[in-house]
Image 1 (cartoon, rainbow, N blue to C red):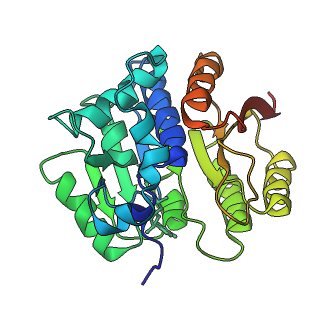
Image 2 (image 1 turned 120 degrees about the horizontal axis):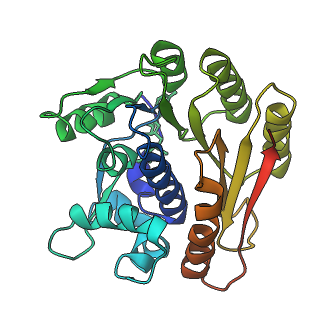
Image 3 (image 1 turned 90 degrees about the horizontal axis):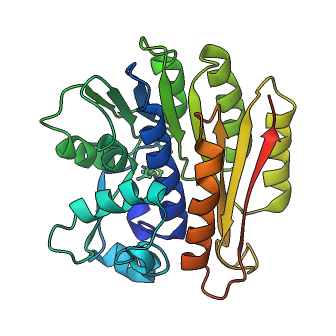
Amino acid sequence: MLAYRHLFHAGNFADVFKHAVIVQLAVLIGRKEKPFLYLDTHAGCGRYDLAHAWAQKNREFENGIARIFERNDCPAPIRPYLDAVHENNPDGKLRFYPGSPLLVCRSLRASDRMALTELNRDDCARLQSHFQSRRRVQIRNMDGYQALKAFLPPKERRGLILIDSSFDRAHEFRRLAEAVIAAHKRFATGVYAVWYPLVEPQAVRDFEQLIVESDLRKVLKLELSVHRGDWQQSLRGSAMLVINPPYGFDTSAAPMLHWLWQALSADAEGRYSIKWLVGE
Ligand SMILES: C[S@@+](CC[C@H](N)C(=O)[O-])C[C@H]1O[C@@H](n2cnc3c(N)ncnc32)[C@H](O)[C@@H]1O
């Protein structure tokens, strides 16, 4: 039984950041005609009811999606993400927050494929219920790191892979680095989006160092922090590595992150950055 439940955190600032990025990646990859596989290794339960007691406990969504839900001045690359959230709230009131599979699925074409894996059995069953009528979606109750071995390389030879661990086990940064490096050996041309929290600074540095010292190339690091607070008190920010970003992504990421930082950083104390962790 896994202790982590994403419903406590759904729609928080870290979700908004990671979801705006993954949707934009799907949009850009879809500009080339050839189909691709979207693999979501830690897929969650699909959709989160923000009125549920767990979501209400800390109301994390208030410092995330609630701050931007009604804004109509976002830069164009954020629009598809916000439109997807609105589609899940057709009466215009924020109640449901869609997880990464539902958000990305809206940007896929009929020829694209999804593979979603989730280790928590109950969450996986809920996830299934959101995709019952959809063909070209495979959902498995399995370990996300095993999924990288099972699904890669995809037959399409094109893929977008989201690795969004819950970081609820010891040594997760090392496990994540090893999994990413191994996955890249199997499928070097895939576009990988790897999310991680900005917690324990030494663990974050060691993780990034393992990536830098590996064979990986073209690794873009995006970071968004919303306050300067002590990482031991509360999550101040998170980062994503985008490996093999599609053409145009680095330029569209700048206005996205600038706007998100302004919207989500209450006291303008946070920061955002975009830099190549490893170049060509
Ligand atoms: C941060 S949540 C993911 C949310 C989802 N990607 C989204 O953005 O909507 C992490 C999920 O990973 C699941 N999980 C934890 N360890 C896992 C593992 N080893 N393999 C697959 N899923 C795992 C948790 O149950 C949780 O639902």
